Length: 468
Image (cartoon, rainbow, N blue to C red; front, side, top):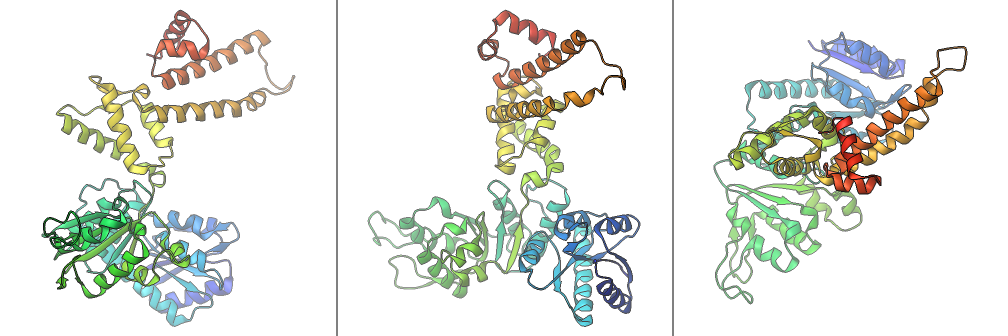
């Protein structure tokens, strides 16, 4: 018997769903709002959730991750009204198990629930058995755990897999992990960066060529598709392929046969295909920029990687991993970080995602040289500039806050003007020079130039506020 939470603002829908759940032999609890549902979930160890998208106190999509992160790891089934395919698609991209359109039959509800519970049990069993080789993937947040579960499921099949993610999220790392966890792990994992190959060399790079096929072809080359025989072919940024190459590759994918440039006979290659992209291939297909039939073939399974800003809780673990990795390359002791550095990293948006974080730590470690601790002055300039801008923006907001710190006369004690002015000026001064120090890396001459002060005055302020 499983515990099932039903969230819908329509009492009739709740009653029908609860009846179906109980008829299937499970326990059901219902809620008409997100707040009631969250309160109920705190004491109800739910294993499946029916979640309506349109609720009185919020949208179901905004709460989807909250329910997925419950310690009971429930599967979430979305309930949608007619005419809301976009909401259903977004929910699936966020990890929902499935969606039902109202009004759903009892049979549909029961079948979807059974499949969700079976999938959850298999997912948890794989996790308990530790079958996933992470292949360098670091992190433990719920969004990443779900990607690892998708990875494990994809690795067990030979179906084509499409990995979607922003630049720097680790698409190649996940593709390699799929290969390492698959029956093809003992064979080659072949990487093709489609964005780095020009149209003129793409065909011969993928399919190979024979000697004399074109100017410069002095030797036979088997091609990367042939090299991936019995292994995995990873096409990174597949959205960069032109339509002609898409057509040729579709045939290769369907028949597993191709003809090298200049050859008279076809070659067979038994490869498993994994693709990655940071582009919206569906939108490209609608514009005629990507073949719809190829899209169907490459996304038989799909995994969407979260950007780093959506997995901030993994940043400390990632920092430790990359600092240890850098230290190993330099044959030195791993550096540690002052708490303020970790706070900066946790607050930054990371448009370049994990790759940008890794590069920032490598630059900071190099700037620190023999110092054992990373200080904010060791951080790359663009990070310090971003910090300074955010700080100055915060100061602008604080101007409107100062007046609220004091009540009108007669309601509280107000300090003398001179005392108040001194306190405010010193606080602003400290904050200004703290940010200026970070921005310039502590270079006194540069600080003096920007602040329009003498170097001796800047030096005394550095000592006053203990910036070193």
